[in-house]
Image (cartoon, rainbow, N blue to C red):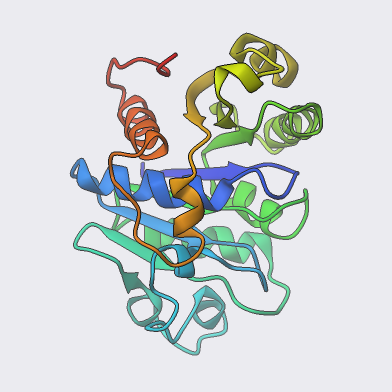
Length: 236
């Protein structure tokens, strides 16, 4: 069965899209065929992060609306990484979306779904289609509380395989919460920690970033762990 992974958090601004981009790139470089799906209707960002916003014509809403087939909506970032953009408007049936993702995902090793903020809309689409989830939190109280609520909602939707990514973990002198504190507060098993990294801001402004930056190296470790390789959770 193809792995379909929802990247979720009820809170906006915790870095879900950056993590989707980073993991998609890392997994594709490890030989996996990867499909990224942006489900943040009206506020999509993965196409811009992947420098594909000016070349795309269709989105997955066009597939559901029968305006095109999947092959025309897929944006090929490289030979192993492809993207389906979110529509700019519309309401969509989660069951129909799940069936579409199930069908398209058969051509890929791993599909990663980028959910928008909140526990409706894109979140409902993602959990209807996914069989795994990555819950994203930063080390602040509001994000941890949102991650706790999100994780329970994911479990309520029948997804039992979920892991925690702590994003934007600050430099030692600025830390208020240890990694163990975040795990305890969210009640989700950890798969990786992404350090605070100014390079990521460049990607949000259309600039190609250094593949050896701290965050990119963390994405690679998390990708290895997703592939069941024995690597460290994070570098202290």
